Amino acid sequence: MAQLRRATVIGLVVGIVMLYLAGVGLIGAFANREVVTEYLSLGQLMLLAPLLLGGYAMARQAASVIQRLAIGAMAGGMGGAVFALGILAVLALSPGIRDVFIRINENLLSFVLFGLDPGPGALLIVGLGLGLGLVGASLPVVPPSVRRGLLSGVAGVILMSMLEPFVRPRLTDFDLHDVVVFLYQARGLRPVAALVVFAVSALLGLGWRPARAEVSRRFAEADPGAQRMWRWVAALLVIAFIVTLPQLTGVFLTQVLVLVGLYVLLGLGLNIVVGYAGLLDLGYVAFYAVGAYFTALLTSPTSSLGIGLNFWVALPLVVLGSAMIGLFIGAPVLRLRGDYLAIVTLGFGEIARVLFLSDALAPWFGGVQGILSIPDIIGEGTYALPLLGEIRGPAATYYPLVGFCLVAAFVAWRLKYSRTGRAWNAMREDEDVAQATGVNIVNYKLLAFAMGAAIGCLGGAIFATHLESVFPGTFNVLVSITVLAVVILGGMGSIPGVVLGSFALIGLPELLREFAEFKLLVYGGVLVLMMILRPEGFVPDVTRRRELHEAEEGEEDEGDDGDENLTPRDATQPAPIQA
Image (cartoon, rainbow, N blue to C red; front, side):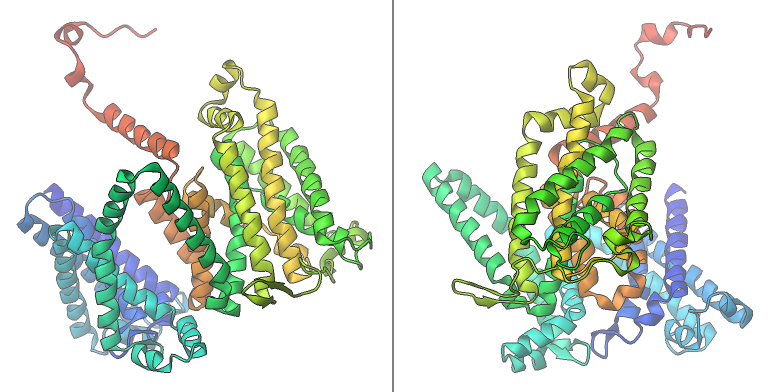
């Protein structure tokens, strides 16, 4: 009965999710966006994937294979039935209900019913739910390596199809017209190309873990000299890849990399404040804005100061000034913790934006008009690098930005394993205990705010020189929330996690511009799934992961029946009288 009840609940959730995707317009918006030309569209994938996932989620709870298949099919069928009933209800209550759900129109209804009449279309949806639930339920039965290969193949096909607007032009630029013709037809992959991409991706998924294990084993067995040599070889390969990336990707993708790099810088700074010291800062955009405006004031000849300093001369002054602002913001919140700290820092972030926007300070900061004519980071617009030739456009910002990110990552890494990092870790665990053991809470909190501000202002400085202008509307609270999401998604306290989180939350949405209208919806969904399935993040810090899993184990232990752990003497003793 418990399994049937759980299958019913999962089926209801799947059906509601499908109705939600249809109601907000995701399914209708991508009904004609091909994944595999003439066979599978993105809208169809969004419609059918929840049924498959529902069967998979349900099957993991059962013991025997027959039970898994049965309850997985039941969960999928229930999801299809809930969705079909919702669609039939929309048709029955038309047209009044469509005045509320404006995304539900005739084209969408025809699409989700597969062009059939309501009755046969609803039965087909239920049948697909049963079939896809059964397929999803069979996945846990498959050996893990095979399942990993199948999932890698599907992910490879979807990714290659979604990146068609960027892959096709780059292949054309390299005169690979035959490859373009083989891969793409209209906006999707050709069926034969989809099979090839699936096979290659599946093989990579199958071979990745064994290959990594073999390389790790051979590396561990090598002598120290060989290990050192291979580390240098790997480092040089990574450096060569980073250096040549703008030449491989083109102007638009280099612009995306610049945007990702800016959020890597901001994430590294906020990671010190939140991940290391445990200070929940929702006003981090203030440091980003301060760095941009200080740079504009010192470098722009049209600013109120009008001194027109070189960027590299102004940069130390910007960092010092931003660190002082960090101390100024940190001083009033020394006694605050948790939610109260978050609310106050959120207020400081809004105060900074309003000040830069205000008419009272317009003679200094330009008000709504902002500050213009900021020279670029080099001062001449182009420069030359050995073997790469003349660098211009977004690439001119890319290389200095990579250098800043490396310096910030090195500083954050050194701080993490220093005496200061251990003090921050103690504060994050328990401020009272840390203070009792001799940690100066005031000094270390102020230092965290100052270091976070110093690194965050670098992102603002580069942002100002890249756009050659600053406007107060750019620095809204959504920037703070996005940077915090980057840190949480990647893994709080983890430097590689910040990089991966920036690529996931900033790079992918920029590449998938088709989803721009639903960007915040996708953000929310990804964060909810991460908090449920992997709360420690993509690349978690070892300490943070241990803390989370120990907390989960502690909660499970508390939920056990306490009488099982009592000795006979304990069990026979009367309960103490409560005062």
